[in-house]
Length: 498
Ligand code: SIN
Image (cartoon, rainbow, N blue to C red):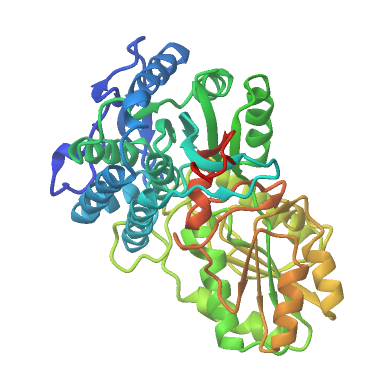
């Protein structure tokens, strides 16, 4: 290991191998890849660079574990998930340290993520014993019809680096609750958190082969294709970009897999004249700058009505002045680095493009080389227009572009002028407008007078090019179940002796 993470309370959570069939293993080729700390750029360790062969071995392990795991009762699976949840709670500090180390987010945010992540296990531990079928009134006399729900089978789960723990638990929680076994491809940028979760799964007594974690960076596409083209894998759940989602969907076509995709967003965030200014500013700060703008539900286009525009711009910029950017372990740091220099380049491109087209930078706008290659100043730009790149592409970084609008109809039209539709937010104190605009926005999730909609109890997912399927909530488990209908014929006999 190179630059070291502050010592963990339990050093055995720091693994540098993949976890397949209940064992810690290297890639069959012996190859590894390096993982770097986004704050310092230093190598922090290595993980196995797995390939097709390794992925197929993990799929076989999951397939071998399926027949007995799918027969466990919901209550048994609930207890396993609850144990895993408790181990996450008990080891929260170490998990947070790992997240900050490889993702860069400040330690307070990382702790928040561990809570968020573990809550998916708690939620689905409660769903596991409550998987119901229906009794159906048959149209054919003498027939009796009912349904049962069954696990889909082996699932391939592909998750991103922006929430190294929560995106994994949001998929594994419902998969295990449903009785599926999984092959999870951990993010190349943040595999250590995933490996610590695997170690906790082991300690929780999850049977071997039920949960398998494979690792790859350069070979990510090869691993993805092996998962999507396998006829043993019956379902794929993916969180990531729309471009990769489309590719995985094409690759899954030949084997007709069940799919759920949580893809890119370009969230509109609307502040009407009648909004409470402080609430709207606080909501915008939360929504835009959470994880330094690196979430799929971050506000991307901030539309502010003309009557409140100047006041909002001033108060919002004032709040941003209070941020402290730096390494995630540093005292008082509110915002960390971006994940890599490609992310920084995209952010810079959006800022320069906005400036060239008349946008006025109120704060920030520059890289922060004194801190490191991956830091960018939290930025606010006013006088944004619809032709600018930021209006059409998800920035995925700490840049808040403020667009001015006059009417409700105009802003809803602009908000919906996007191929994607994940989250949308607006601020208003007019009850009728709240209903009207919430129903008019073409998104899967709406936040009214709040900048945060993420909650294990609430269905998470999008429409249009943001994907399909829902995670968390009572709906999340359905993505891992199929309905089997059973008809009993000849049941309409008269009572004996009548
Ligand atoms: C994401 O960025 O994909 C997830 C964000 C969240 O769960 O809040």
